[in-house]
Length: 372
Image (cartoon, rainbow, N blue to C red; front, side, top):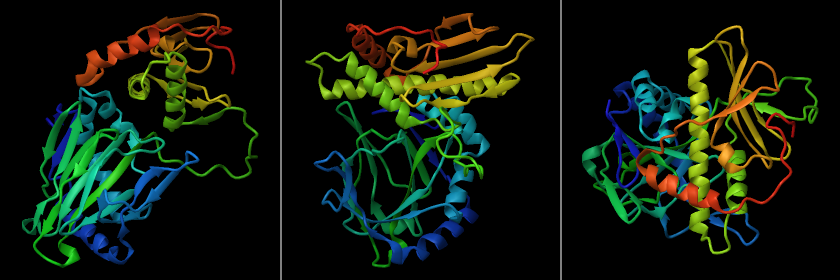
């Protein structure tokens, strides 16, 4: 199944995403949300650095959120992780798409567009936001004109035409817009509809076990990839190696590429534990903001731990490697892996080499296995 496209930036396009029976259920639920739809808001940064959601001329549509218990959300999850699509994700050239089988959909946003509605260029932001998935829908497709999705990157643009029941997945930081819509009807049931989801890495969170005292555990293990922690560490690494003349854009892309490589390494661990006896995890987010990810494999009588670690005592060049621990804790070795950066491999490699070539501040070194 060839669903991957390269320009202007890697993205996936899947037509006929939902089944006919699923669409009937979805349109019924969307119709029931009509009274809950409110003018769409955009994220702005306040003076105190906090995010604010405000009305803006850049966005003209109506939107509502749907959460756990929604039939539409259940059908979206079932369709997004159907076996044929999972196979396509795993074979994708772009590492961010390869981790989709290990993501989950926490919720959906429903957006309704009538005549004159649009959404100007913007990027999807927020903690843990790496991939945006959007499905185009229309109860009466022949009545809808416009409403195309435009992706922009590196001075290039591509228009992905509105087509009923089409799924598009792309990196959330890609500038994108929805072109003005024209609907040959005043009936909101004929609107151009979008279902948007921002995929989160890991399994859906579960409730804490009863009786467990808060704050009793020094390290917090979780099978969710704490994107916020990874991004925070990547930002710290790039900031430390950043020369005064470096632009904010260089800083951003350094963080982006480092995060991609780390998530690609994590996907490798997930894949490895599927094919060998053992287990993945836990992923530990330590109190100092560091992150440790490892899998335990038992291909023979020898115990093997494989993973990566990122914290104040690990140079970013080391964070790009996987380490392998065989046998006892005092036998450590680091091994490099080739991480494919998709269509942007030369740019990613050059940027990381540039950032990591700047002198690294001297720090007291600890053993990779030392506790934080």
